[in-house]
Image (cartoon, rainbow, N blue to C red):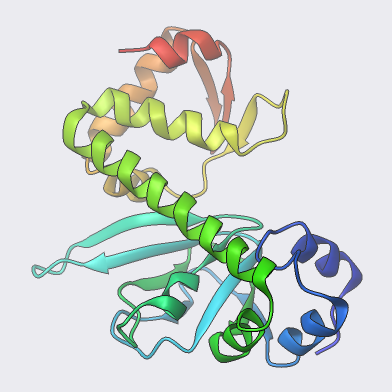
Length: 227
């Protein structure tokens, strides 16, 4: 497929694609697809064969699993300029270990695992980039396990808000919540009512303000120390 100039710049800013030469990127794009998704559209289900990984151009995708009693557990919400499912290329299992679904209008690239692995075998820089990406993901998962296991609900919400803020350009104190509060609460393993109560405390104490899904951090230092 022909790569849009803006999309080319976006991909080149990501460390999984930056090491590729123009010819290698063209080869990867030759087996890729640009997908335009609506809210609720599914990219893959848990247990399906993992042929591809993905890059979010705009919008957001939730990664989740269903518990034995049918409850949905959200592990992560993938936002702009982030990849997901790339770890499946290096895992022994041939199947996706979770499901992926758009949480709103979303545009993503679907890339072929086979094509990327072929390029990986012939490009040391690309191999180290992928290793770095997986190391960052592992560190994030360890932090989440620690937070969910050892910290209270307020700390989880504060950590979540700080993580969302950290993804914004420096000096920008506002961001959009990537999904509904019920999904965020599920991701943090707390009840939606608990999430709403903590958010109300933060608002009442002038730590944050909220308008719809738009959150503005009014006092970042107090937020970091909020209990």
